[in-house]
Amino acid sequence: MSHVRITGNATGTQGTIDIDGHQIANMVRGFALYAEVGQHTTLDLQVFPRGVSEYDGEAFVRLNSDFEAFLVHLGWTPPHRP
Image (cartoon, rainbow, N blue to C red; front, side, top):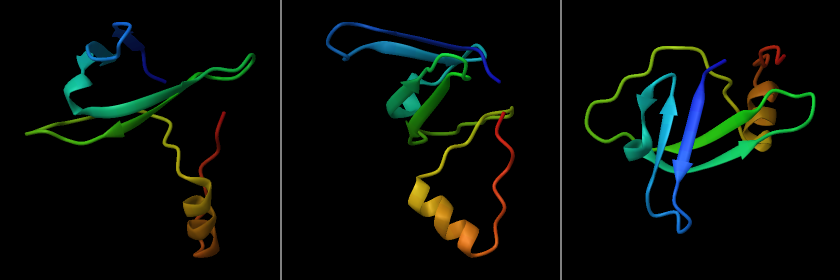
């Protein structure tokens, strides 16, 4: 689980996305934040690297359901989700 902080202006033209203190807004094309009562909050990022980038840490990785079904058909076992 990561600490996430997102800020932005009303028009969406400026903002910041920090994950565990690392500013990554310059690598993000878009994002969706999902929060449900009794569930972990999930942040989906559309990322495109610029220059050299590095990430080392834990994250929940979400796949498109059709792609996940395809991988399961090939024998992949999805990890347990809390």
